[in-house]
Amino acid sequence: MYHYHCLNPIAEVGLNRFTENYIPVKDAKDAQAILVRSASMHEMELGKELLCIARAGAGVNNIPLDQCTKEGVVVFNTPGANANGVKELVIAGMLLASRDIIGGVNWVQEKEEDGNIAKETEKAKKAFAGRELDGKKLGVIGLGAIGVLVANAATHLGMDVYGYDPYVSVDAAWRLSRSIHHAKTLDELYKECDYITVHVPALESTIGMIDKNAMTLMKKNVVILNFARDTLVNEEDMVDALLSGKVKNYVSDFPTPKIVGVKGAIVIPHLGASTEESEDNCAKMAVKETMNYIENGNIKNSVNYPDCDMGFRGENSRITLLHENKPNMIGQFSNILGEASMNIADMSNKGKKSFAYTMIDIDSEVPQDVIDKLASVDGVKKVRLLT
Ligand SMILES: NC(=O)C1=CN([C@@H]2O[C@H](COP(=O)(O)OP(=O)(O)OC[C@H]3O[C@@H](n4cnc5c(N)ncnc54)[C@H](O)[C@@H]3O)[C@@H](O)[C@H]2O)C=CC1
Ligand SMILES: O=C(O)CCC(=O)C(=O)O
Image (cartoon, rainbow, N blue to C red; front, side, top):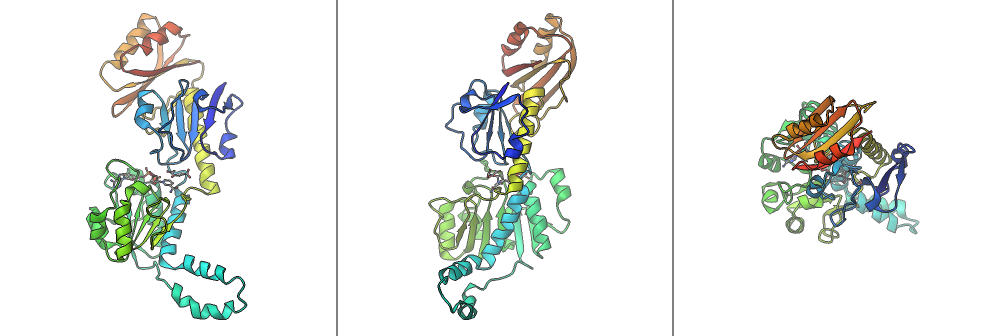
């Protein structure tokens, strides 16, 4: 039996894919697998049994990645599974900033009791007039799963789109519409665009990237959209830019005390991925990744360990080792197995920065003392025997 714990509600359609060998537990400390959306895990103590964490979503800034890696806990996310949900809300965000839909709807709501509403509308509506997206320039920073969808969709709205991503993947580049201009620098994008949307992860290198210096380069009346993370924007600088009129609107999916209520800020309560479809997609992918790792040792879509796949375990015993990526690890593993007269039937080793993963199939039973010897090799973080 395997134990899992959900730190946030995870869509049933995903959880239903767990076989009868998986049971939910009340306390995360007793779980071999944790499923999470946005709950912060930074203050949590990781349980001794914990093998993996599956983030049903993209951003993993709520998970203590370094600690997980050191403790041999594999962290998965679900790339692209909620990208369409976010794309659609970004388009809505651009429309909310361009037409005073919110002001107009609020005005109508206040007139609930007014029998003259139809007549008054024709006089009042000029206060809520706006501008169109067609022909405007949109800058997309980060051309991953979401950025590509936003960029492509905006071209169909008649926008002239500039994309910036120095690390764009080959896959994403293939999916990008040919009509999108390749911005070689952020400065170029900032100077050109009427709308700027950010779709990068929150990293040391991206936190605070939309600050006073960046906004100084932008056009007056620019609209900035942030459906990635609040920390990407320096909020004090943003408040100044909104109040001075440099930025027309800041559309954000992240309410914070600094930004809520500021004139021109349109703040949404983190709804980017809150659609039935995105929640289902993320849950299904997260459960699949979890089961494949727990049962077969295969890693797919991990953010801290390398992807490595040897298919179904079959009849063999499978040993999996999470370890530091340094010389002679494989040599030491095969020595231990050789001394115990174990025959390696199949094997795979993959590295990712300072850490690596080794999977070894053995065509006989593996005694516990062999596993203990493997676990005692310097640099090994976790050894599992799958039988
Ligand atoms: N509002 C919401 O509900 C959601 C928010 N998100 C946020 O959006 C972010 C992006 O999500 P995805 O597109 O799915 O991720 P992704 O990993 O597919 O794409 C991120 C892209 O950013 C690029 N990038 C990294 N550093 C960069 C830099 N300094 N400058 C330009 N590009 C850079 C990468 O090369 C990659 O192409 C997530 O990390 C998450 O924080 C994601 C899903 C839902
Ligand atoms: O699960 C959610 O609603 C949050 C989605 C998100 O921010 C992400 O996937 O990075």
